Image (tube, rainbow, N blue to C red):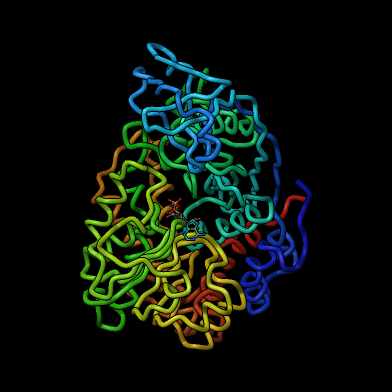
Length: 508
Ligand code: NAD
């Protein structure tokens, strides 16, 4: 867990637009220093007990067990299958089991021979980066991913500081998670990892201090486990619900939160076209990453008449020049027996293409909704789209970004385009705090207004056209010169953060 600090680190790249905007608006040097590095970087270890595994043998190895009869585990309908095809064998599976073993091997009813590997404790690296709290409690997702590291979390935590300021919600920025491949852990192990995280992080997190939410590799069930761990034994448990957002609606989650990021992104795209007296109807689009953000964005685009030409996820990419039927693809993905390991490439109503081919598909809109740094210089040169609406955080590298700008490809930057999630998280936190319940219509109405207002301010900053419109007022934010949208979004964020430092001053 050493501190990575090369100038080409993910964090340094992510801070490039901060530095640019800070130069342009001549940000106060003290405020610049306060924002250049996080307030706190927590690095810790989580030790979790792993369950027993059944690891499949290859055909040659299995030959030695040709006469081994199949074992059955009726207490469990199905043994959970992990990404490497190993099966999880929880203790309760042995109840009523009929097991035949030879040298620690057994055959399952699928005909394959497996080696029984006993569970053991395993240690994971975990982090929580708290970037800035000038505007309110730290706020940001919790990521379970094999490539998670301090550098990535620093970049993502800073991103949250800008995003909460742009969205004008009274939070700061934080981010954290665990270096783990969630597809290689059982549901119970993942839950235990989340419980352990909440236990260790409790001293520095809380509803008024630092509020996590789902991100890549975590979901509402992980949020529920963390809330339980955090609030267990507390005298006023109900007052702790705002510790975490992205919860199930039955335990204090907000209506509309699950689809909020994808929907918010589509509200921005809608506003982009509305300004040109146009609409999403008839526009073609591509989606990279078909998880929470990508799938809901595709659904909302489809509902507005958009046509999905190509989509991709960690399993590969698909293409249909006549349009991929989004409701059928969603049905396929959401009810797939492989669950979280389902991939779009198994959807038969489209042809499989390579990643290189995906980037070259001609379409009106590209929605990157997977991971960061996907749109490299090479990709940016080849893209055949007119607008990029960034669902993922930091999907373009700085070199890629420069090429997109030079090529005149329009951009709705991540810190604006994917702010729907954090805005609705704020609504969830508010509802929890006030013991209120808002309908989905109410949430969507507020979300649309919030995104529209701030998106329009950013457009005015980029064009240097200060004005007071029906729904927005950009007069206090334009800085007397034009700039690209990413820089404009950053100027808006910095103006709002700067106000706190300038008006409240600094504690020495
Ligand atoms: P998710 O885990 O639900 O989905 C991620 C998707 O990306 C999956 O389809 C996965 O297969 C795909 N993917 C992963 N690695 C890939 C690769 N190398 N190539 C192609 N596809 C790959 O995550 P999510 O919540 O949808 O988040 C997606 C992005 O949006 C992340 O960058 C996240 O930080 C950002 N984001 C999410 C939210 C939110 O509310 N969920 C809010 C703001 C930003």
